[in-house]
Image (cartoon, helix red, strand yellow):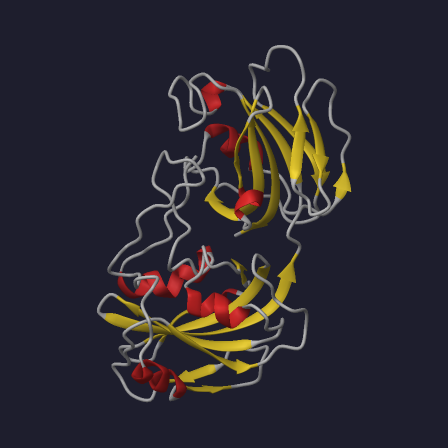
Length: 321
């Protein structure tokens, strides 16, 4: 299975990166890789994940003026242009008063990005009218952001600056909500003859395999129907998922890694069984997929997936954008 590539070139990479969970350190994958394999990022657009801000970087961000009430797009004024920092740097502008943010949470984030070259607005979720969904995780965010978010609360506002090639991008973000970390909706009675699914208290699925030959056609069985919008082709979906061979042997799980995963859907960035089975499902749903070899990896072995394998997935669709 493949992951979408989130890195873009130069400043637009930093300005648009919130659309795929501010993944300046990791989160994307090469064509053909399974979901656990990270892809190389664009070195020109992405700073080294272990880069450390200097005292000058901290002072530069402190000098950025942010005006306007929390809840609306702020005005961001740079102290001078071109504005530069040598490494990612962030600071809290206003503490939140809502739910506490923990590692692994999915949050709704509004943000505005400005160019370090001239201070003009490059990208704004306020202008688009829809916040982005961000997974708070050291594996998906640069550490200065995850450290800033964890332990704070919904409603917080922060400033962030990041090198983008030869330029620097500056953002002001506001956490406007926190999303469920598992499927939430109406239970659906599955058809007979499919693997049984049991959920742990935290939502982690396990399956009871069934005897007999695997289906030769794709099986798409909702287990929980959410009340969100239907997933559309071309979107990026954020999911929790586990995968097994038909005989019940596990081979991959985002639950075990402790953080949801993001994939492009409907655009051949994942196996065909996911493209066909998840487009049209509602956000908030849990879906059982039984994927025959011709819609998975065919006759090509893949790590611990033998050639010709039928795959079973339980997928919680948490967000789509």
